[in-house]
Picture (tube, rainbow, N blue to C red):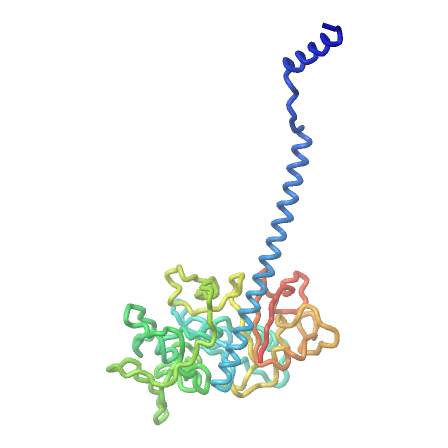
Length: 366
């Protein structure tokens, strides 16, 4: 055997008997890899969050557009857009007890103004909105003593009896709200509640006045019930999460909560916040009698964050002296407002330093 052959055999033996060095990551390499993974996950989370936010905005805007269409249809049937419902105590009214289902369902007539509104009157107008009006007038979640239709009640026991057999089917809908838009609570309050003008407890659907005395309708006596056309629902709510029950403290009850049925309903945006309803003010209790003192363009939170060139008008001054608004807002009969992803609104100004209003979503009609 040659010397060359012997050397080759020795080399092969060394390779077969010497353990190979395992490939491995150094600490630095592992940290770099981990950092890259964290960055990629962060990018993915941001992208998913933005996509989710975009979808929520689109869904909320679609819901609000459907509400606008429903409110326009309501006006076609009744000759006016719905009044503002809320807590009558907010403007010195009688109100209803906060442990009753009627909380925040009082008809609130516009604050009284002498001449051109200013100061506290402007502030009052910013607060003259409703979160309960949309569900009340677009869907109809009342009972027979509240809107002439729905869950069986009696004049002496007006709050709902939700036991089986006492819920009229279909459950949604209502009788005509009447000339005051509030089932007689303004123009013809239920007997014994004449001093609670506009309150939920004073509603008197189908009632009448004789010799100056107000009489409630026969709601359940001997099976006699209020007659007449059933209106609504004007809106189809496909997502159960779009409806909530408004509690006195402002929190929202869901369908899974025990008090959901007895709470006034609110329509929620896709961040779980009630959608606000604004309308033009009117004289007295007649929702047909527009008062030109104010308009939707004077609602600061309804004003856009930025303006398209040439589409700017003037309204009343906000807390910063800003009068910027739009002709579309000034001519609108009503407006809807979502507080957006941050769920907060600055009611005192349009352009706020905390940017609470920047993500507001506004829709108007007609």
